[in-house]
Image (cartoon, helix red, strand yellow):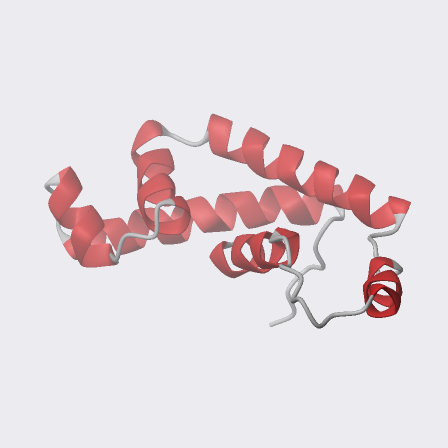
Length: 114
């Protein structure tokens, strides 16, 4: 989930134009815009993730917020919450599994094969 968020954020960063860049090059890059389908799927994905986060137990939601959204390490999150590092890892695993289950149920991500 963290990598997906980072990849989306990375693609949304504005690119700065260099003085030597020509308008033709700019026009060629502008043709690579997201399709309407990608925009809708992105919106659905974010809505499902937000809904899944909202229904998580508070203890799990806080761990996801600290580690996946705020970027804290397991040790930093454990220290912030005053719990063992293993508890952070366990809660994060369970929370991610619940979010993944919701995404699979909606068909936004493929089911993992084992």
